[in-house]
Image (cartoon, rainbow, N blue to C red; front, side, top):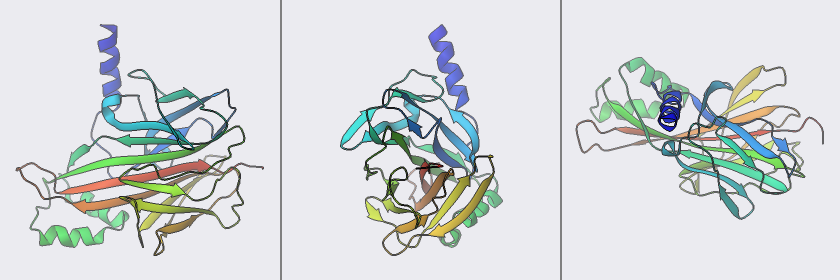
Length: 270
């Protein structure tokens, strides 16, 4: 009974109507830990660094790993654990925490919400295509999934982020804990392993006093973008893929969004 109760409580913690145009990110308790310490992090959904924490529910994620160099270590936990990640650091160096959700579905009962989402994420072409496909303004479904990464320094924090093979992801091309970031942190936005050229990237910068500044930039022809890297600031970088789906059955989704995010914090002093 205790186990079933824990499962029910955990399931309720992540249930409910999905948030529209809300970010999904990995939120470490601290971005720098000693080699013998634990990496502790919440999985969050919300806006501007404010959001609900998800529990450790294996049915809700397709992968949850600590990546360090060539090592990939699955995150272990018990159903209902919150924070979702509390695991011994794999050793000195840069660790990339990777979390990919399973597919989630939503129905649009309010046409304005879909329009606002498309405008916010720079998908105005979707609105034209939606109309051209003869799709209804309401009552249609979308499938979505999330692809989150977070950079944590263990000990010296030496090392590099890398592509981890997700459908879409953001790869840091410099180390925020060891490298010179005078020109910002260069990142590459990928979809199916290929650079995403000229796409919107949202940046949320959280200061030590809790204030958050939101800005936007775009990738260049090589899928590259320079993200600010001010000392002491925590960053959430977000990029979304939108693609059409051809329904087979009556209630099948007609759109799919894939959400990539990256979090890191530039040390206040080096």
